[in-house]
Image (cartoon, helix red, strand yellow):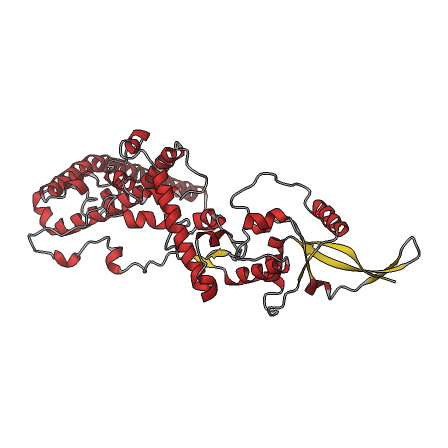
Length: 434
C-alpha cells in the first residue's frame, strides 16, 4: 500500500468524519439523558403520590405520610412510567412492608435524639431545686412517675419546658430520700452477707460508714467507700447489659410475615412504634448509677479485710470507727514487710556515736490498703503494719509527701479516689544506738 500525500489526505478526511459522527452521537445521548431525567422528575412524584394514596386506603396513612425519601428508591416506586391501578395488587405486600421498615428505621433513629433532649430538659428542671449533692442521676428520675408518663406522652418530639414537669410534681426531696433509703438498705444487705454471725447482729445503718467497709463496682478494681459508692463515676457512666441477643423476629421490627401472604385480602399486622414501645430500649443504655438491685455493685471482701487489719494495728475497732474519724487522725503507717528487704545503714553522729538507720516505707491508711492489695494480697493474714509515733519521723514523712505532691487540691470532692491519697514515701529512721 502506498503512503503518499494523497493517501494521507484521504485518511485524515475519513478520520475527521469518524470524530464528527461520534461527537454528534455523544451529544444526542447526553440530550436524551437530560430529557429522561426531566421526565423522571415529573413522573416519580405522581407515582409516589398514587402509591401513598393506596397505602392510606389500606389503613396505613401514618407510614404513608411518613415515608422517607429513601422510599423513592424502592423497586415498586422507582419506575419511569405513569401509574396504573392494575399495578397495585402485585406490589401491594412489598410496598406495605418496605414503607413500614423505612418508617421504623427513621423513627428509631429519631427516638434516641428526642429522649436525650428530654433528659436535658428534665435535668434543667431538677437543678432548679435545692437538692443534696448526693442524689440519683437524671435517668433515675425519668424512670419514675410522673416523669416517665410525661416523656412517653410527648408526641411530635416537642421540647419539654419547666411548666410541663412543675404542674405534675412540686417536691423532689421525697424521691431523693426514698432512693437513699432503698439504696442504703441494698448496700447494707451486701455487707450482712459477708459478715460473720457475731458481727451481723450489730449490722445497722451506721455500719456503712465504718472505716472497715469497702465496696467495688464491676468496671474497676478500686475499693470504694460509703457514701462515695453512691456517686461513683463508673456507675454513672457505664451499665451492665445482660440482655439477650436480638432474634430474627426482633430484627424484623415486629413484622409478622406469617400473618400476611401474597394473594390474601387482609392487611399485615404491623407493630406500632412510639416512645412507649421503645421505652425499654431507650432507657437500657442509661440504667446506671447506684440504686437497689444494681448488679455492678459488690462488697469488696479483700479491701475490707485489709482495712480492718490496718485499723487494728492502730488500736481502733474497724466496725466502730468511721471513715471521717480515721482520716481525721492523720496517722502514718509503716509497711514492715517491705522494710525487711532494704539493707540497714550505719552512720557516725556528731557526738561520735555509731547509729544504725533503716529505710521505712510509710503512707496513710487509705494508701496502705491499696499498697497491700497490689503487693501483699496473697501473703497470708499476718499483720505487717506499724503506726509511726515518732514526731521526728512524722515530720520527715510530711516533708517527703510535700515534695512528692507539688500541687495540692484543697477542694473536697465526694468522688475523691483512694488514688488521690498522699504518695508512698521513704524515710530513714533510727533503729538503735551503740
